[in-house]
Every structure is written in structure tokens, then in C-alpha cells.
Length: 411
Ligand code: PMP
Image (cartoon, rainbow, N blue to C red; front, side, top):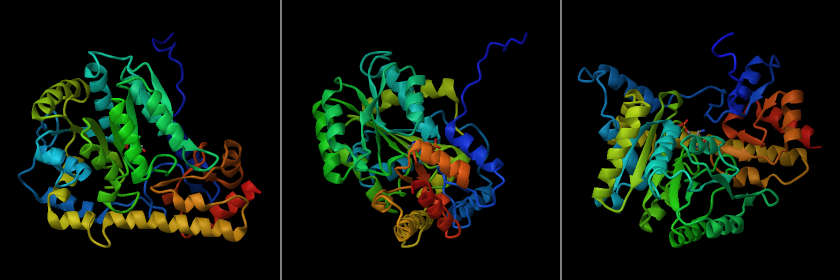
């Protein structure tokens, strides 16, 4: 009998299982709309041109080595990443009340934030504080907070399936009734999986209730740039909350907007009341990092930091009319418009305006689990059981096939 004989088999992670099933499918027409990664119109991963350039700069730089980074990460990465979230002229940065921790991707940033909050927020080692995540949300939110020790992870109302839009009343209602000091995980932009964000006025209403009811704001910013193609516009909610005086966390991922999925580049931005609070928070963050990964990896952080800190490279990544971020955002917009047009032309029952109204990488199609099963089994079009599709999985070559598949499934 093995020492591991009693270990139960865990269920696979849905999105990765979907990719494996896709790989094994012999159908030449197969399409993968599951995993949340950018694809070119040839259906290929895209190494951003600016990243290729910076990779060469790093290789040529003889002053760089592979010594450990500081526990909290590469300083120039942390500060430039926080600036991208909060804005160059953020009053919080000017007032020295912003700190940051370089983390392993957006997931690592959420994890560090969750571990810190469980230990130090709302009373020492407080696992009773409710953590609210949107219904629906990126499935890992629940697990990351539960795994950090929070015993009460709950959904807050967000999506109105009937009207295929934001359930603002339900959202505000849950904010009103949540116990004081509850933690709310908010998607900064391009909500995953619904592709539906609050408007500015709606964000203002959310902020008003959160401030009045003393709720903790934990932004998850995994798609900055993907919603509108503009980094500033996509950071509007985060920056608005800062102007309202919140002390808050913002978990940033550079996986999508830099195409650095496997480099694990993330940053946890901390906005506090003053410099002294930031210092003490970071001192505790350092303890948590030390027992988790001890020191972060350098390559991804260097790529991002060099890009953000070099005017010319920054403009190539984002800031010119046709920069790398815009190239990705525009392709998503094009695919949205084409898919909607094709479904309309086919006369597919139902309204498909939500395909173009939704923003970011994903669209919440409204297909139910049975229809999703049909799409996978009969058409080899792979999508999440929730009906979420990655718009980047669509190309000018496969879009007719996908539209016909949806049509056949729905009728
Ligand atoms: N938050 C959301 C909403 C996401 O969709 C993702 C990635 N799928 C992440 C966080 C994590 O990003 P990363 O891959 O950088 O860990």
C-alpha cells in the first residue's frame, strides 16, 4: 500500500481540461474558445513586438545577473506598475501612500492580498470576515480566498441573465446588507466572465455605498487595456475609488496586456492612509512572501519595467494610434462585430446585441450548459460550460463555422 493510497483524485481545472479535450479532438474544423489568452487572426499566440525588443535589450545588458531580487520584488517594476493602475499624477502616489509587492501573476497578487487580509484586517487572524465575489466570477476567486483561510466567501449579485446586463439593484442591495468591513472583490474592468462593467455613474453609486458601509475594496485588474484599448479609461474605476479616499488593494496582472502569461508578472498595489501605514503593511507582506515564494522571478518584471520606464518603448506598448495593446483590443472588437453580424445574417433566434455591448476578452453568450455540450460534442467548438467564449479564439477563417455552429445549436 502506497503512502499516498488514500489521496483522492481531485477534479481537473475546467479551463485546462477543455484545452486538453480540444487538443485530442481530431476534427480539423475544431475551435478553442475556452482559455483566456490572446490569439492572432492565424489562431496563434502573440509575442508582443515590444517584448521581443526588450528581450534583446536584456540579453545585451552585461550589468544584469541572476542574483536574488529583494523579497518584495524589483523596485522599478513595482513603482511603474502601480503608476499604470493609479495614473502618473495620482495624488496617492504623490503623497507617498502607495506601496506594492511584485507577485506571481495576478493570481499571486490576489493570494498575497488575501493572506495579508486574513492575518491583519478587521482584527488579527480574522477568518470570519465575509469575502464577497461577483456572481458569476473568475472561478479561482473563491478558491484563492478560501485557501487563504477565509471561511465565508460569498457571491454578490452582479449579472442579470434575463436582461443580459448588470444587476445594479442586486449589487447595491448586497453592498447595503453586507456586514460592515466585509471584503469585496471588484473587477476593475472587462469583467470575467460576463464582459459587463458598471458605467461611471454606477461605479459612483457602488463607491458611495462601500464608503458609507465601511466595506473593503479589493480590485482585480487582469485586463487593463483590453476593455477599451486605452489604459487610462480602463483604470477609471480604480482611480475614482482612490479619489474617494479608500484604503484599498489592487491586484494587477500583466499576463494579458503584455502577453506574458507564463512569466508570471503581477503586482499588488496597496493604497493606504499615509506612508507610515504603507511601511507597516509592506513589512508584513515581506514576511508572507518569504514563506510563500521567498523572492519573485526577474525576467517578466524586467520586461515590464523597462517598457514602462522607457518613453519610446512605452509608446510602442501603449500610447500611439497603433500600439501593441490597441492591436489586441481592436482585433477583439472586430471579432465581436463580425460574430454579431453573422448571427444576425443567419437569422439566429434571440438577440445578439450583447456580443458587441460586452467588452474585454470575453463574451457571455447566453448559451446554456446543454447547448455548450452540443457545441463541443457535435461541432468541436470548445467553450466554458457557463457559455463564456474568448473572442480572441475567433479568426476570419473560423468565424463562419462558429456562427453556423451557434445557429445550429440554438435553432
Ligand atoms: N483575475 C481574473 C479576473 C482573471 O481572469 C485572471 C486570469 N484568467 C487572473 C485574475 C489571473 O491572472 P494571472 O494569469 O496573471 O495569474
